[in-house]
Image 1 (cartoon, rainbow, N blue to C red):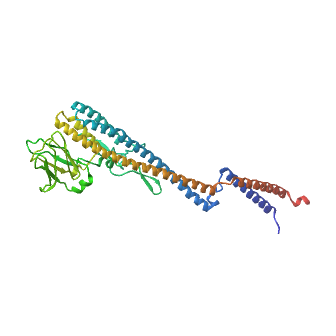
Image 2: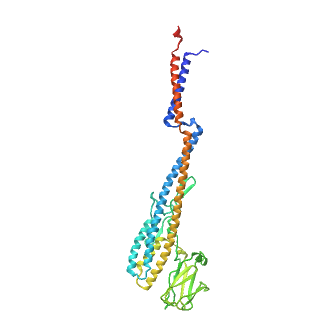
Length: 412
């Protein structure tokens, strides 16, 4: 077979180009540290690398969500601790002081002044924002101020009953806010039963406001949703009957004859104090009020402050203050218990973030290991291969030069 000069030349050039391409490829692998430079190098590994990259991008988003969630929940926990540990504690102390019968109107006014400051502080705390400028206690309405002071001095809630959620894993959505209505508005009011005084013109006895002290007994005796009215009818100076609206006797009891002591009337989970000296014919009524089943924290504090501001130095004023402080203290205890419960939930969410973050870190570590096995270059093997390819290239170049210089004209 004859081989022309052009064919020999082309074969030599093709060999040089192939060897040069091998060296260049290996140099590129060494410079990038990757053994897969294009999807064509390993289609299966390239698809797997793409999947790993997408998974890592999602994990990065989840980590960003975790950081935002952790910041919001930590802020909420700090605010709740400030409310219970500082503000509510001081308000309770003021309520206990206000119940002291030795105080006059000036003393109570001074307590009311401090209570107003605590009330304002409490309002500011309930309207706190997180690091992203979202209100913590407005439910899912992060841009809406949750609590507003009305013109009459009462307070209303402007948020909703939802929660803002952040995705921290493929199937995990974590609440990063709470509804102020659930925590600070829907407080089970102990004073959800209203009392009226005796209609006898010469009566010296007085019934206090009613307190629901046993919820289970109250719910059993006065099942929702109806309202019920009962009467305490004294059949003598000591003995009384508790009758329903139809006049049926549902309970009996007695009090002592000492007008300086306070007697307690209990019925259906309700407690009422009786002061003074009752007489036969005295009739006091108490009735459930479904409209006042719940009461907000701010309104509890506001009502106590108003009572301290308007109270006089008469014995009746002292009894009114006593009743109001008893209501406030009982309701404040319920708020504190609810806040502690919410703090437990916040702590559980923070623990969820920690465990999920650990899991994602572990997954990311595995993904990096798999990714490294698929695409990272074995430098020792690549350097040895490059040395061999360089030697082959040099040999090919030298052979090409020698072969290319051969010609029949050298022998003519």
